Image (cartoon, rainbow, N blue to C red; front, side):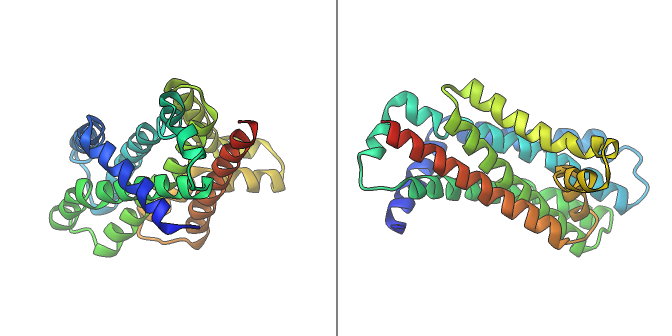
Length: 243
């Protein structure tokens, strides 16, 4: 893989993001929703830091899902609509480099949200609720892993769709499926139940908000990210061959 090509895609995405309304919309909207959710849920008679921490990071979970889906839903489909995807196909750049550059951009924005947008609220947990720093750190890691996982799903949805609304619908359906399967896992036999529960996003994320860094959950988010990125590359390859 040519890293310079991937970095060029990455810089192009950053320039578009911060040079259009998307930057203020995603970053400002995330900050606003975080403040709104936490003011409503977190400081409403919470008795201790355990409750406050869980509610805070569940709020972050909600906002990072929304932000990453919005950020990724037009990532590839807009290239198709503007005709720039065909230009990329005729350039000396591979599908892997295109996707890696776009993913690197998504991971950067996810990091900005996790550290700078969300960062104020964990500090409040530490100072106001006296929450241990290891819980704050593990919850922050969980938000970042969930964010890049969601962005990879959004990239995959964008590669399949013909417009942003269909891309959004595909991404939301995948996330909802992975969200609800755990709740219905008890309806199945042991082996199937175990598999379905393992696919449950919430059960993996909630451990991070309790100060735990579970290896299975880290592997789940990272392997899921690589899986959706791989499928996105394959979708682009099939489109390239179809012309």
